[in-house]
Image (tube, rainbow, N blue to C red; front, side, top):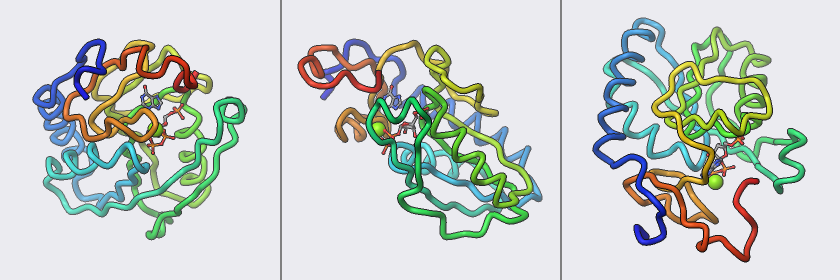
Amino acid sequence: MMKDLETVLYTEEQILARIRNMGEQLTAEYRGKFPLLVGVLKGAVMFMSDLVKRMTIPLEIDFIAISSYGTSTRSSGVVRILKDLDRDVDGRHVLIVEDIVDTGLTLAYLRDVLVRRNAASVRIAALFDKPGRRQVPIEPDYCGFTVPNAFIVGYGLDYAERYRNLPDVGILKENVYRGSDTPRT
Ligand SMILES: O=P(O)(O)OC[C@H]1O[C@H](OP(=O)(O)OP(=O)(O)O)[C@H](O)[C@@H]1O
Ligand code: HPA
Ligand SMILES: [Mg+2]
């Protein structure tokens, strides 16, 4: 798998070190609030798993799956819930846990849903932020790393469902997807 990477952007060690910092910060911010952490399937699974282990306060976790449709419909902002939360968010301090903010469409939609369900607060923790591709104005409240305008894989991030299990994160070589659909453009 590593041979399919153009460059490694962040090693597993660098990612885990950053997540440890984020966990400490979030522990301080959410102390006494019994937050509900909402992971967005499937990409956020690794981040969620490592982040909650670095938060030393009582909390709950839940997961939601959101459809991305094709690229053309996606740019129109059409998204929908495939698997909903198990927990009621009414009155809860919700922290959305995402692997990456790209166009921002997924998060803009999810944040609206949670606000409409009467969450006491809704904030976003994203491991990666790719501000160069934003289509709607939305920023993560807590961000691990800002990444360039390139397609990245590893540590939960996939191309055609592959590479999620790569421990490092890097830019995918163009020849891997040449001939098929350019990912997410
Ligand atoms: O900001 P956006 O342009 O909306 O893109 C970000 C979203 O896209 C990816 O999910 P994807 O739909 O590929 O599902 P996955 O997590 O199962 O890979 C990623 O995990 C984010 O959830
Ligand atoms: O760069 C990316 N890589 C993988 N999945 C993604 N979803 C949005 N952007 C990306
Ligand atoms: Mg994906």
